Length: 300
Image 1 (cartoon, one colour):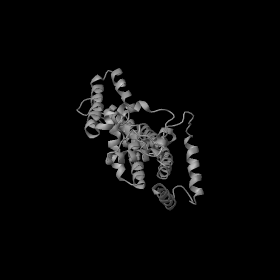
Image 2 (cartoon, one colour; image 1 turned 180 degrees about the horizontal axis):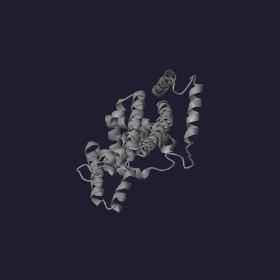
Image 3 (cartoon, helix red, strand yellow; image 1 turned 90 degrees about the vertical axis):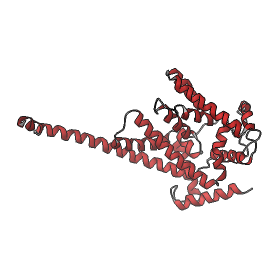
Image 4 (tube, helix red, strand yellow; image 1 turned 30 degrees about the vertical axis):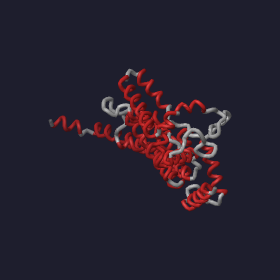
């Protein structure tokens, strides 16, 4: 026992332990440094999003108002030059937005998207085995902040889209427990709001997870059946999606090319400064611009 104790406390073993601790400290410092840089970049983009037009959010609000007032979703634009091109279930989900003014709706959408982006990063890292908090937390912050370099994430915030909500639903479903009554619910509900997530039903079949695929299909069908009770008119005419043409108002032009994220950020910073603001993150400047835009939106 004495010999073993001597070996454990030998200078060689202590040196190896110190080397491992030093390596871990270096990795931790690098992880947090990356998280800091990416976190600042993400925070700037979130602040910019509070000042963005959020055209898609305005359409969601208009659709929610149509649902609340009993109007027609598809026969006419819900907002000047913008048709509603989502399934009726999405309009019901958007109904609470119809009760909010522009400012609170934008702030709420930005906050929701922040939570969803962090959740998606957290769930993704855990799904590949990163679970130690000392690595998981900086990894989540770094990947969430860096995600604003991706056009889809940038536009999701600045246009007020629901794609991060769909991502969170699908990701929670695909990486969740393989057994349970709610299996397939995330994909099914996401497909009820936008048809694109149905592609994951095919993926589940290819992966041999047929019961999971059947559950997702059942949940998607359930959203459609529910809408026949809540919105029988629009649900019965859901095939109206076939009339959407590329040249209809509110749809992107065939030659539309989105700007790279850094260029769009720079353009928005220039716009903010030309309005008399000292910087994009100045609370008084952002608040003044939002009040000006709100008055403009409310003018007939």
